[in-house]
Length: 153
Image (cartoon, rainbow, N blue to C red):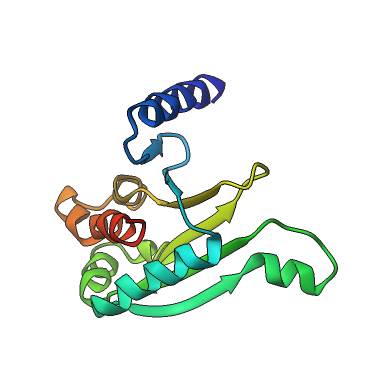
């Protein structure tokens, strides 16, 4: 795990040096992550606008930091957006009902201790492998990457 983290950190720094957007997949966790130039709430506002423009249903938005504050605990800005498209998700669940554990899609926007904002989501390849789906189903899940790119422009 430490070697994977070190390799991921080196890749992240190399991409930053080149000025390119960061999208990293952690093979152990199946997570993809990208830095956001916007505050947490604005990041998800922008993603929500992109999703709605594409006709994608928003199921919920959870303000983890707000809920923590409500019980007297501190948590840096952290929000989760849950969304999906039944046309894309239903065939996946027909092929492997367990994928319903990971659908609808979720994107977490969170602020780290340095004040930087990150966007994290499940890697489509990880979901395909986790639920033993045929590789053909990757297209049903991989649109999330482009949607996040559009929101962070």
